[in-house]
Image 1 (cartoon, rainbow over the protein chains, first blue to last red):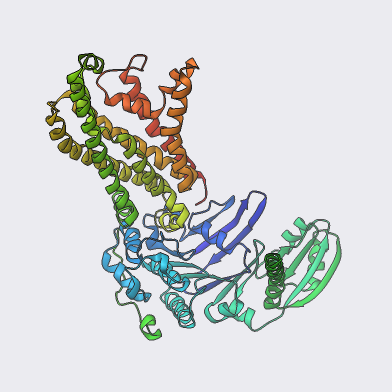
Image 2: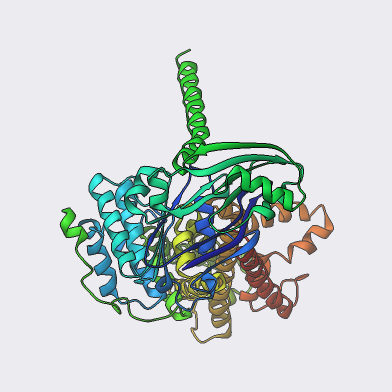
Length: 314
Length: 287
């Protein structure tokens, strides 16, 4: 089980992860969905202690990752493919990591076979394709036979067969009662793999709900509210299965409450609302809206590249 | 590979991964596996030994040749003074060049973790960063000491017959040779530890090696060049790691030099302070 409480990470003035709280339960696959740059990787890096949270805490099975006596046996993490010296072979890389926990070499050979790397185990990692790099990363994650798996975009660069294999692996591990936390920026991929979804955008949790709820397009009552005292209103609205997201200084988005209830709670707390707009939006639509910005970002990059080509020709 | 083969259930039950915990010896072993699995490091180790032995042989031959010349002119012989003392330090004469290779190697042991991204794997496996850092430091100390020791002993075997040809002798058990041998080993260890610290502080191979070369080559040369004009430079220069380190390998203290115990303290400080600084920075910074 992974528990994050008010986890925040600042890089200079930029806030990559903004007071994020969630729980990843054992026995199911939890998808961590968000567009690129939403804070997925940073959150995962904080879970395993590579990045220190600016504020807040995150624990794995009740303890900070670094406080476990055998971290590799507790958590298996794939953070970025090819976190390996290019001139080292896959087998040596695995053996060097196994040595830290006195994991027998037989287990190294086992995970090599399990991830389909037998044929290239003695080859230098520098020559690996992205897909093979991902397989090696997964082999590392499985090395300690951990109770918790954290996989950051594991299907990136995998062929269709590999994608299916990762899905199968994730489901199998969850079926054994393990905690499986997988990030992706693709809703479609998560729809096939995850039991539960945590959606993150611009460093904040947008949704934390069972996958059926997201997939069925079940429309949750959603509303946009403007008030002068957003903090107080957010506190007044918080509750089970309710997502409250701060959009700007005076605007918040509320998912899970209808307009009438919101107005009633505001009145109870003596908070003035100056806008209350009901919105019919499924979580998937919310996610699509979120990634829309990302798409625009990509296309502007494309234009730059195009301009660059023209420059060369001139 | 087929999907079915890949997807088959795990062959071994729980316990296949054993039940060991993270231990310092395990991490040390891991560091040795990483070190020895790179062809480039093995080549650099070999190069160090070859350079040390080669330079010792050439310098010995040069000294011997000068001796023959001196035998023909008594004034020159008087100028050269006691050559028996010099002979004892001949096996370590390649030190100046070997130090840079070992130092660069030590820089890369640390910096390559960050430039290749393997630091992510390393520090996820062992989140105790200090354990990794000091295991690396111990590994580098052992490697540097063994490389220096082997080089100088091999050089001794090569130098002895060469200088013997010119009627000079090196006594293995003499204080002069023993001092040169062990303090040269310590000297190489110091350079390696400074290199590792630089690799950790800068997280960049080229940067680390450049700073190391500046500290051991450029700075002493530049300061030496200006020291005739600027008085305090000559005094300040004595505090450089290479000056303190090489002074310790000599039986006699150069005029105006620091006392040997001061040199010893300087060497210890140069070995440990950058290293401790790098350990603190590693603890604080994100990987």
